[in-house]
Length: 135
Image 1 (cartoon, rainbow, N blue to C red):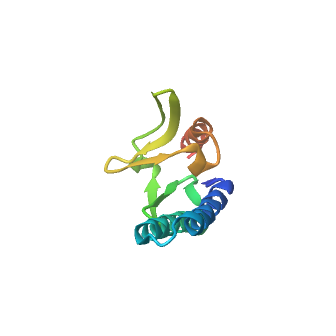
Image 2: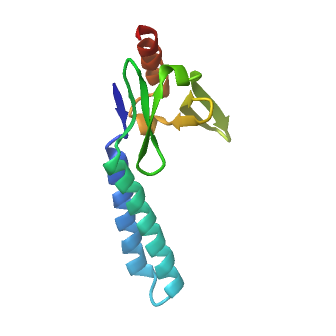
């Protein structure tokens, strides 16, 4: 089983990079600070979108364990024995609600949002629990 980034996310990031570049052309004038800030923002958005395009699968699971994306392009394989807990972390702050799938591997905790997984964290947690029991 695999869970991947929603396809709309890298496209949105690329559109945002183009929008920042257009706004810089329209409003930066001869101010070098605005050009540098716009350039840094465009570059950051492009790198962020590139990560989504190069490593769209954030979480994969099979009978032996799971593989998670770490850092920019790294991967880490965890056996079911290494995973201490799988849960959905729900938080509410200032009227905004967030849910994350949390994989606790003892020495590391991996968090995945619905945007990272392409599905609701509850559904992924249920699928992982079923897969873990079956193994």
